[in-house]
Amino acid sequence: MLALAIFVITLVLVIWRPGGLKIGWSALGGALAALLTGVVQWSDTIVVWHIVWDATFTFVALIVISLILDEAGLFAWAALHIARWGHGRGPRLFLLVIVLGAVSSAFFANDGAALLLTPVVIALLARLRLAPKATLAFIIAIGFVADTTSLPLIISNLVNIVSANYFGVGFGRYAAVMIPVDLAALAATLGVLWIAFRGVILTQYTTGALEPPRSAIKDPLVFRAALPLLAALLLVYFVSPRWHIPVSFVTGSAAIILMAIAGRWWPRGRAATVSVSGVLRHAPWQIVLFSLGMYLVVYGMGKAGLTELGAHALTWLAARGDFAATIGTGFLAAFVASVMNNLPSTLVGALAIHHAGVATHTQELMIYANVIGNDLGPKFTPIGSLATLLWLHILASKGHRISWGQYMKIGLLITPPVLFLTLAALYLWLPFSLG
Image 1: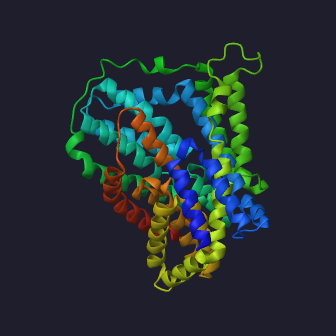
Image 2 (image 1 turned 180 degrees about the horizontal axis):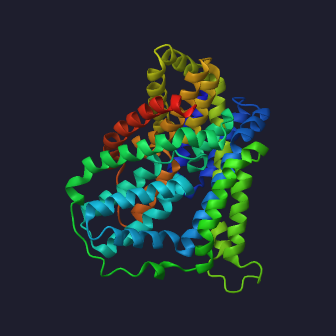
Image 3 (image 1 turned 180 degrees about the vertical axis):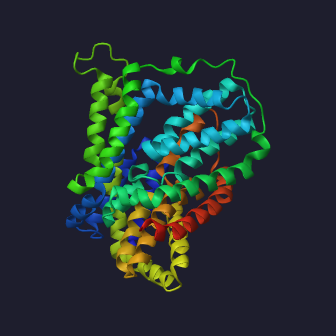
């Protein structure tokens, strides 16, 4: 009960942020309370840091890369292109926006896709003068597809990195399993969003007021370097596991190279148009503190019995067959993520799977189902992920306020079918991926 009380208080402080309290300090406060009360020991900090450090710094590096590319105009350039490719037809533009969100989520993580694309899409829709209901449909689509399609690569979600590192899943093996599953998730997301919003996106628009895409490019050198750098980064991700190089080292190196290009370090900053210092100031450094603090609090809950309870539930599911184990693990993870936040929920699920003692094939299904549940499950409630809370804050600042009630109504409508179909795709695909 003490561990649970500390967690609940910490989560409340993280969500409400009284007096503008940073999420990292809230989480560290909860961790300190857990240490002082004996819920966790000081030696546990080493265990938890070993689990989260690589994922945390990878996430920070990805956001730095995303912010630099955004400052250089890459996302605005892409948005202007898809507006033209839509040829004035609302449904086609809706499809292209969702695909853009999925691609962005795959390479820049779900947080980068949601937080950077949302303002760009809002500005684009304002120029296209779409009706308010149609605009809301596009905004909801961006917010949801950023999470529902954050499965394909280890780097696509902080959840993926934590899980892959905990169970020793290599970049190539993870991609072989989850890229096809992510395509199924994208198809399911498209289908469900189309059913939900088809009545308001059947609209026409004109592109006469739009600038040419090239006008969005603010730093041509960074823009030209983006594709080769991302291609090289992806290649290194696949080959680096054989030398046991942490993902954060690879991603951090790419971020430093891009900072050097954007900051024009060789001529000492002359002709630089992107403020690298500004990007670094806006990088999510609080996530480093949040990860250590929140995971310590949750680790304490695990030691207090939550891991054992989860292991019993997973063992019960495994006894009902692999299909039940896959669907059950995914929905259980989604439920826990929706009330606990998906970052600590991922650790709870990983610890429970590790202690469940199930067959190897069933355990692998559960590992990936836990990832899917924690990637998609946060869409049930606004507190399911920090990205959602920040996304809602950005929308409110742009004049598009969505209440928690409205959000949950949409989330409970859209998420369950997408989650079920994605988990079913995992169950069907995993045996073939072994070949």
